[in-house]
Amino acid sequence: MAGERPTMVHVAEVAGVSVPTVSKVLNGRADVSEATRSRVLKAVSATGYLPRLNASSERSGIIDLLIESVASPWALEILRGAEAEAAHNGSAVAVSATMRPDFSIKRWLASVAARRSDGVIFVLNRPDHEELDALRELQAGVVLLDPVGESEPELATVGATNWNGALEATEYLIGLGHTRIGFIGGPQALRCSLDRYEGYVAALRRHQLDLDPSLVVWEEFRSEGGSKGADALFAVPERPTAIFASSDQQAAGVFHAARLQGLSIPRDLSVVGFDDTILGEYMSPRLTTVRQPLDDMAREAVRLLFERRSARTDAPRIELSTSLVVRDSAAPPAARR
Image (cartoon, rainbow, N blue to C red; front, side):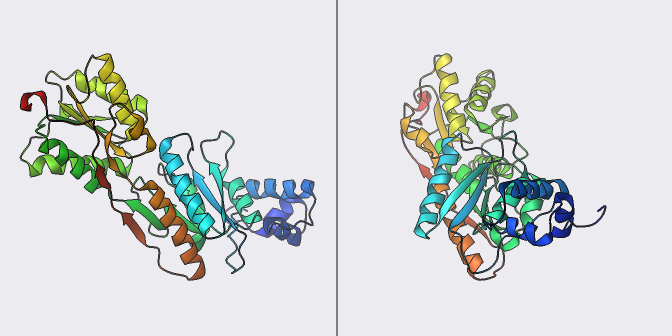
């Protein structure tokens, strides 16, 4: 099969069954034994065959949502929005996590086709070209829910205004009187990390403040990344009076690191996060943060999936607006009080 695109014929040959039997398995027919079904799905994985979703008007009532992990408040916001909108449209959501050690994109695609899913919402946590290439095979059956800000022209995409959110957060701190503002970015390979950094830089420039490279660090979006980033910023000879963290989880890590240093928030250090997950409401003091409308983004992705199923349209990129949520974790620096 070198150089050939795998077909159902190849799958049938590897599985030792007929082409109609392969078709029955991929279409979720019940009149196939479990042993035969398992053999066919293994052959699908072995050959690399990528079945297309059923594009007919008949609906199965299932939407597949593929996400890196569900172990974060960020992911739960997305799942909540997707489930609510799917239920509104008479469907349910089947969730799969790509971080599972035994996850295989080929086996997953075969199972999606077998249950005749109404379509796929793919949450792009990080660029993964193998997964994106596979999803392109589904074409009209996919919407990319894209909080990291990547652009995939062939896929309908829903994202958020990361640059504007970072600009607003930084300008809020400047308005309080802060001139030494630390920035903790996410992984530099992600477009959203760069957009938030560029928004931070734009705010400094707009207010004629110099960019100090020693006040910029790049870490993972998790709380551990926030703690490490804060420790690096605290080691700067003239430490920042405020920190803009690129996620709420990072901000929680900043809180932890500040307390270990004996710093009080916001008396000694102001902190602003990004995402506005439920975490911010329960931090002490409550976190000022940029609201990335994750639940609304998920709802829009589901709506767009049904729209594109009923009518072939171009693949749009929709960006929902961020907004600053002011709570208790930021105040004027001590010198201004």
